[in-house]
Length: 454
Length: 71
Image (cartoon, rainbow over all chains, first blue to last red; front, side):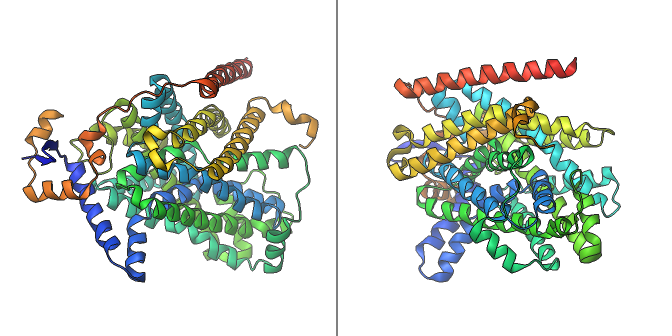
């Protein structure tokens, strides 16, 4: 029998339902008990989507960008600025937690259902293209990071794919999430690397309080600021966290812990990002030009300062950043495909029932990985296309997120209060403007020429 | 898919577990029910049209830049 009944209504259950129910039983048991350890266990059971999305956003290109920021500007304005961008990310990502818990539907699915097939398909296709191009950059980071240890590119890519596929093999969301969280914890490896550089804590404290020293205001600095703000929330983050919240089986009772999960993820990601800036700040002090450095080159440049062990940790951090992002981003594409095409979409699906879900996930990852092995890949164009696609996708994704979270028909009493709407509107406008300006500067580089710079 | 579901057997304990642990709209079968389309009016309709125009404009800019770069 696969049917039960509730209030006389015949209910058909599936394998996915049974797996999710097992997860919910543990949550209910933890919630039923009182005391510090029960609360801690409940938090342990409910963290996941928020931490993964924030540490996933600390991906290969982002860590490279933080490393370049540290090497170019040292300790100063960008340390509190990075923390501020993660605060903005919390405001946006919290909305996806509420939407997922209240509706039990993914972001792409809600856009499709509430705003029609045009926007549903547009979101899915644009997200798919953007994610695919981003995946290429993640595998480049993995290849470069493992290249520091002399690992040949094809073996580096194979290792990444084995880890990605290993997380999937259980066909259980819970196991996939825990394996990915364990991998994501390695993002914090940048903290010991930063400590090895013996940063001036006085200078760090001064920069956090005063936001000084400020970088010189020119075209380059403006573009870095715009890129950092624009990259605070990327399309895959919205789609991933909402889908993962649904797949995890979170309900409205779990929203508080979903918020804690998001804040915890942002705090960990901020710590890793700031640590990366601190780790490469000595390169600024030594007047090293790192404009064209790749991941392995930063590790090599740091080796005389922090030794082989520290440089190895730095390179491993880059590998981890690429691996975790490739796992979460490919999952985000598979979720969105299933939501828009109405095919089964869950990490709880057995292979037989989730063929299209696992096929999309595997195809995205394997194809992106294979492309990285092409000699002479024009990385500059890949990065350019990622930005262009993000510019197209972000305004609709943010606007629809805002409209959905204020949609009383689907959210009921969980619509945003006025103060939250004012805050969210401000953040959405800043993110959209910064993203569009940065994208425009990529598409039409002459637009900021009036500000000077290189 | 329907055939597959019919073939899959779950114990009565599983059924009880699912029905007692999941909210009704969390069930896979319930999620297949479409959510009604939202009928936009006033400022929201203007906003969605603005997004359409934005997309058309940005796509034109991108195509123009790609065309220029290619030549």
